[in-house]
Image (tube, rainbow, N blue to C red; front, side, top):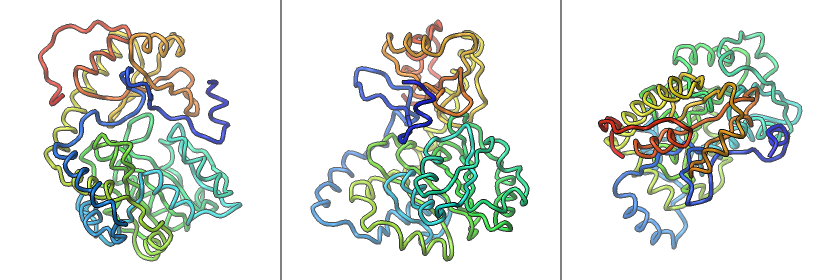
Length: 354
């Protein structure tokens, strides 16, 4: 499908390959899940014969501990994108303008337009440098950290300063932290400012994208508005129970962060040195690669012929010669490298659990 037609369409193209025979590097999800999830899910499925407890006290407590905030500030949502939509439904009206980063997650602009508002596109790495005057007519500003698809993070001090300027301008700041759990960086939830809404996704870090569990964090009247507006029973019982369980698996989270960091460095070195890709700095579980003189279609097709799906990053604004690859376990990463044409020899296993 033509990338420009995808960008102009009503639906947003995402990674994720439904073919079970394909090793999928187009979606940025953990290939591993915490031990014990199956049992938690089985128990929750039996409990799903009743409506969920709409207070979600245990889920809120686990989420709050994970991002270091008060449980009352947590708003359960069926995934991070649901948190983003909930925030935009409340903050935007027809005729409003929203600051949207690029190249970044394509759903931001779509969600803005669904509210009848207009996206104003700004380079993702310029967003936090905007002065207050540039924010005066913006009802909402979006920051993604780590940014998707580039993978780099916003410095917490820069983000706090930008949040302060947004507050002065009367602009709500929506911080998408879908991949921040793969890092040690603190959440913007710790700011506890009335003009800041944080959106979090559980399912990428814990390898359960089909579970659809996430949450928003807000404070004051904005928190109250989000809590009132969220749909009743916004999480199914399995999502709430498995989500709460996963958020407390500290050893799994530490091992995941260590493996991703190690394997990301290894993949980047090979993609750069052997294949000649121009690879972006990344703190996320993915790498954005400029394939240079190669044809993106050829890179995608060649990898798929070898059983591997790679993300076509041309669907992101301004990325006309790029692909994005996820970071998985060592064996899978070796298959990716081989599918892209790199030589993969026998090496000691330094990539953590696989």
